[in-house]
Length: 197
Image (tube, rainbow, N blue to C red):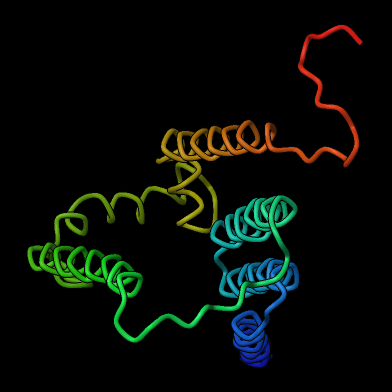
C-alpha cells in the first residue's frame, strides 16, 4: 500500500511541475507552486521525515506562496511575451553574462568537492565520533523515535532556533519593504503619515 501512495504522490508531483512550467497565468502558477510544496510535504511525511515535511509545508507552501501572491498583487498577473531580438545584439550578450557566472561558480564548487570524503565513507571524520554518539545516545537522552528530529530539536536546538530567527527577520524585512508599496485607489489624494486630517 505504501508503494502505491508513493507512486501516486510522485505522479502528482510530476504532473503539477509540468502544469506550472506550461502556464502563462502567474496567479495560477503561484497556486500550483503551493500545491506542489504541499504534495512534497506529504511525500516526505510518507517517507517518515516529519521535520522535512514540516519545513516544506511551512516555508514552501506557506511563506513562499504568500510572498509570490503579494508580489503579484503589486505587479501583473500575466507572463510577458518575450520580444524577438536581432540575431546578434548587446541584449543577447548581456544575457550570456549570468550563464558564464553560474558555470564558473559551479566549476569552483565542483573543484571544492574533490577534498571531501566519499559518500558513505566509514572513515570520514563525521562518522568516527559524532554520528555514532547521536545514534547510540539519542534514544536514551532524547526519547524521540526519529533520529533526525532528535538531532535538530535537541542536539542542534540553538542552531534551529537561529535559523528560525533568520526566517523571522527576513519575513519582517519583506513586510517592511512591501508595506511602503501599497496601492492607492485612483482619485484618492496622497496623504503623509502624521499629518492632521
